[in-house]
Image (cartoon, rainbow, N blue to C red; front, side, top):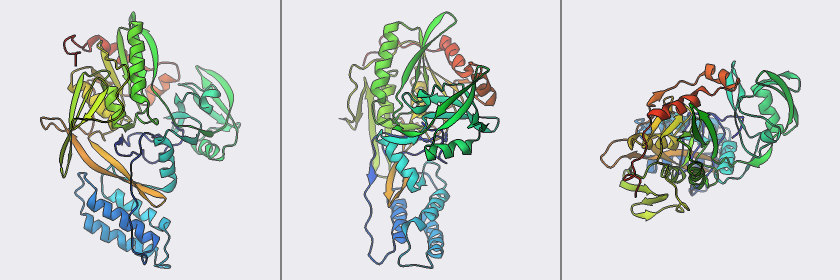
Length: 442
C-alpha cells in the first residue's frame, strides 16, 4: 500500500473493492471491456464520450435512479463547449474531466471514472506488478496523514525500519506535511525522515522506488488473559493472486501451534478479488451460497473446502491442502473495510461462525463492478447485486456484533504501542462461537 491516497479505490470484475479508504491499493485478475469502434468523423473526445455512455446504457446494472438519457444530453453539451475550438480533432483527454463529472452525477458510489494515471496504478496493482511507492500506509493524526499503520514487507519503508505506530515528524529537517511526502514519492529523491517511536525521536533515510504492490496476509501472535491467540492480518484481497492460499496456509500454522482463538484483521481492507475472498472465507465457514442477480437472471455461487463453484462449475484454482478453523473466531473491521471484505464479515455473521468487532463498514458490500478501458483512461461500473438463496439481500454495510470506534484517540494510543481495537477483538473471543464437529464436515 502507498502513503499517497487517490480520491477513491478501484476495482475490476470479478474484483470487488470499496471506496471507504483512501489508499492507493489494488491488484488481482483484470478483465477489461474491449474498446469500442466509432465513425472516423468523430473526434477522439467524442468517441470516448460515446464509449462511456454506451456502457451506461448497455452494461450498467446498479441501483441509480438518475435518468441516463437526460444525463447524457447534459454532459454532451458540456463536451461540446469544451471542444468548440476544435470540434473535429478534440483530443480524448478533453473528455475525461467531463466523463468524470458525469459518472459522479450517476450517484452510484460504486461507479466512477479513472484518469489515466489512476488507471495505470490500477493495472500495476491488479497484476501484482510494480509501482513507485514507499510501501507504507498512514493514518491521520492532528490533521495530517502521519502515523504509520502498515508497512509492506520488502518495501523501502520496511528497509528503512519504519514500524506500525511510528509518528512522522520532519522531512529533511522541516515539519512533516502530507504534500511534501507526496512530492518526494513522485520525484524519487531521497529524504531524511524524522519520526518518534514510543517517545524516542529517530531519523532514517528513505526514497520511493518502483516496487511490488503484492501485500499478502501475515500471521502474528498475542497472549492475553492467559491465552495464545493468532492474529491473521489480511490487508487486501488483491495482490496479484495468492491471498486465499496464503490464508489457508497460515490457518494451518495457527492450528499446528495450538492457539486458543483467532482474529481476522480486515481493517482498511478495501476489497479485491471475490474469488480470493470467497476461498479465504472457506477457511472459517464450511459452506457459503450466494446468488448474483442481473437483468438476465441469477447465477449461483457455492464455496466449500477451498473450492468455488459458479453454476456448478469450478472457478479459480482450488486451494491446496485446505484448512478449516473450528475454534473461537472474531473478525475486526473499520469504516475502511469495503466490498468483499464486507462479504467476509457478513458471511461470518450469517453463518453464526464468529463475532464481528469494530466499526460499521464502508458500505459497498452488495454489488460487483467491472472496469472498462476508455482510451488511456477507464470507467468502473456496477454490473450486478447479491442476495442469499432465500432472497435476503446482502447489506451495504456490516454492523459489528461488538462496536469499537477507532478514531483519533485510538490512533494516539497506537503511537504508545496500544492497539485497543485488536485488544477488544481478542477479548471478544471469550464469547465467540466454536464450530461443532459435525458442522465442520463438508
